[in-house]
Image 1 (cartoon, rainbow, N blue to C red):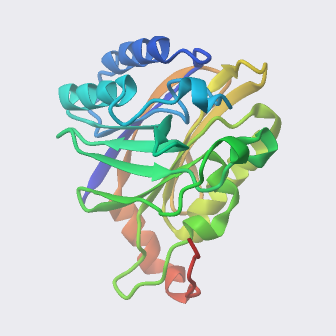
Image 2 (cartoon, rainbow, N blue to C red):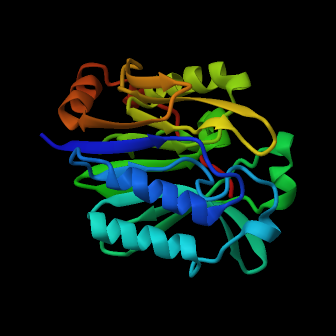
Length: 263
């Protein structure tokens, strides 16, 4: 049966310093000895969760995207994480899905964190991105999206659920970490899929502390990996056989409601 191996990098970030973050992440990526297929970086990995898009945004031809492309090609992996991107005078918290052949997929964060003013600085996305790897369908989302279950909800299809794995990249503060941990497990249970959440650690430039608590959850909601407060590079192999077994023995997905999401 098909397997998929993912590696998450839970780390502190250099505040508003893209060059320093690219250097740091390249050193960490070069240290990975386990065979892996997807490397996951946190939300706004090049800058931290800053509300200064005019000063920090890059274009899709900028240094961070060029760096992601080079690393993905050299390491022969999919490299993903979100960055502050400017396009047509709009600013996006954009998840980049960089393939090892240099092709790129994008997802613009839909649910902007109004509590921090993100909704006043950025433009929200309107489309999901469900990627395909080795027969696995992967739904790619960003941080605050986790609180809104309809956006990630499996659509009912005749041939089965529409995706197998949910990945969230995040800058989720420790003061609300109970919600992070609870909702990651809930998304796995309700969608009968694997869920991976990759969060940062340490204080950001606003002195907000992040405890990490990155997590890998199986389709029954059982935690396969998690770590708090410490930097870590973790590699986990997901098994399609386990996923198919859960969905066959407990076919709850067949009873899901049909619905439509407005742009």
